[in-house]
Length: 210
Figure 1 (tube, rainbow, N blue to C red):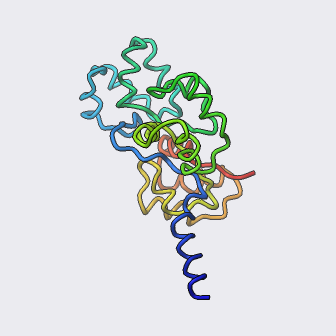
Figure 2: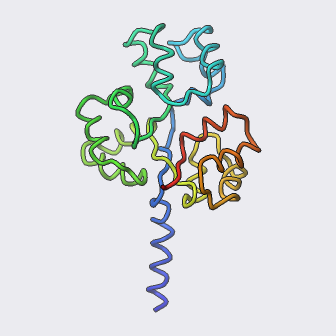
Figure 3: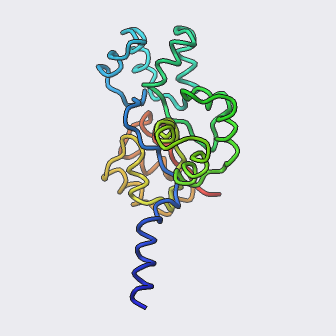
C-alpha cells in the first residue's frame, strides 16, 4: 500500500505541473518587452532610433504589433534575421497563421501543425505533438518563440514563474487573490503592484476558464 501511495505522489510531482500552460524555455532569444537598451543596441539590425521607438512603445501586446512597428523600416529579410534573436512569444492557442509564420523557420506546413493540435493545455502537450515532426534540438529552438496561457485559478507557482519578469513575490500575489471571478478582478488586484503597461504585458500570459 505504501508503495502505491509513493508511486502516486511521485507521479503528481513529475507530471502535475504539465496540467497547466507554460511559457517556453528561453535560452537565447530576447523579449522586446523586457530587453535592456544595451541588449537591443547590440543587435546588428537595430539602430538607436529603432531602439528608442521600441522602448517608447512598450509593451507590445503581441508579435503582430511588434512586427507592424518594424515593417515600415526594415526589409523582410532583415526582420527575419532579427527575429532569430528578438521575438515576442506567441500564444499557441490564439496566434494567427501570419503570426506563426513570423517564427524563424516556421513555414506553411509547420504553422498548420501548430494549429492542428489546438487547444493546447500545456507546453508538454505541444512538445509531444510537434516532436513528431522535428528533433529535440529544433523543438528546443522553437519553444523559445511560443507559450500556452496560464489559467489563473489553477496554475501552480512554478507555472507562474515561467512568465517573463515574474518572480516569487508576484507569483504569490497571483495566488493570493484566488479564486478570480473575472479578469477585471485580476486587473484590480494585480494593478495594486504594477502600472498599467506592466499589467497589460502580464495579461497576455493568463486567462480564466469560462
